[in-house]
Amino acid sequence: MTRSRTMSQALGRRTLLGGLTAGTAALGLTACGVSESPDSGEKRRGGDGQSGTSREVKADNGTITVPDSPKRIVVTDNYAALMLLELGVVPVGVPDGTAVPTLMPEADHAKLKDVRTIGAPGTPNAQAVAALDPDLIIDQFYREKSGALKTVAPVVHFDWTSGALWHEQIARVAGAVDREAKLTELKARYETRLKEVRTAHAKQIAASTWAPLSGGPSGKFFLGTPVVTVMRDLGLRIGAGIPVSKGEKFIPKSYEEMDVLGDCTALIYPVQFDGKATPTTQALLDHKLWKAVPAVRRGRAFPSQHFLMANYSFAIGAVDEIENMLGKL
Image (cartoon, rainbow, N blue to C red; front, top):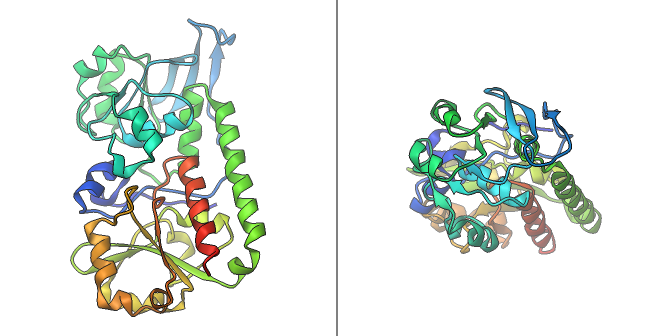
């Protein structure tokens, strides 16, 4: 298993929405291959699961008493919103700018578009949160700001700024909202898809070398992406000199260094859910040096809507896309 750390704030998880719609940032959500779920640190009280019972959840802000099967959950970041949706829970409060249709599947947008907002990411409005009468608040990035909300409802902070794996994060969220069974089902679906693609395309996988990349500012591009972890789970060989320990990070390169892509059979670049690249990636795709890369000349540079890893659905989406790419080699 591999770890990845956040990029700078301009390229990091917490600017998933604003950065992409403005076209000023590369895609940047952490990802990793699957491992066993970490110990959730839960201790049940009155563990019959009925209304009024509670559990103790070990979080990075302490051991927090939370209700069993909470119903009204506020999240302070958009990633937690996508994790909850996958677990079958629609949050009652999300940060401003969470429901952007170009940044998520249509079904997710439909569930989030009418959810009440609680202020800008990183600056939750306590009055707006209180008005939603939550029974749990989930935070992954803003421990200091979210801590003030503990007078409204229990706050669990699962730190996602120090290299945690995406599936570790969703496992902790699942534990906090009592949805471990659903998580197990999702994980099994992902592992099944991995096995199917590895079996069906063993020959293409063995014979190819890959690299993911995205556009950057001021004549730069970025090698690497969180989707590298899914690529490795599929058994793909990663080229372009991307180190094993840094494949999930974003490694800046100048356009003049584009010849590093010469060993690659296939390339993956990001597009939004409307199929369009952000301006910085489009600038890369339009550049003469990009068009001279061998894999590009052979028609083996492929778009992906799943450069981000918010949950297992994103990971499965990446597997589906890569299966289609393998079929074209």
